[in-house]
Length: 179
Image 1: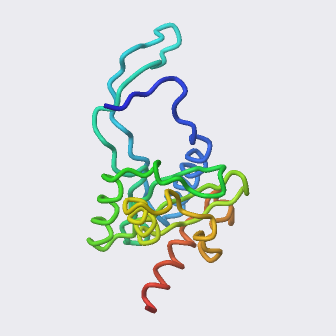
Image 2: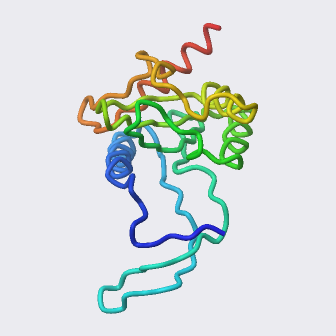
């Protein structure tokens, strides 16, 4: 069973930028995407500050975000790295299974990867993620290399959106429609 302590939520600044973007998408009727909370059971509370200081995760979560954009179901997980690659130890089998099943049902599944060392964000499709994840399970490399992050899927701050990922989603959809 996984545990959380007060040092958790290290990717929260990136997630907050995504949350702001999702609110703006909703306000402009472009998408409705919600952060999926991970169910926890508190173990210790700091009652004077009203904070949970220790807890355990009740069950495995699926992905960080789910919703729909212009009628297309989307789900994604937000990841951060400072290593010039994305370690696959941060992606769990149940997440991979969920994202692949979501794609098979007609949705778009992906990772948003914030490369903090380069100050860049990329859309990484479930297909690319699964390719490297499967290789790692067969004894291959244990990360998604930086050169797997395609420039056409680079996510920028644009049009007032801090993390304007819908452009990359659109590029992905258009690329698959042409294939």
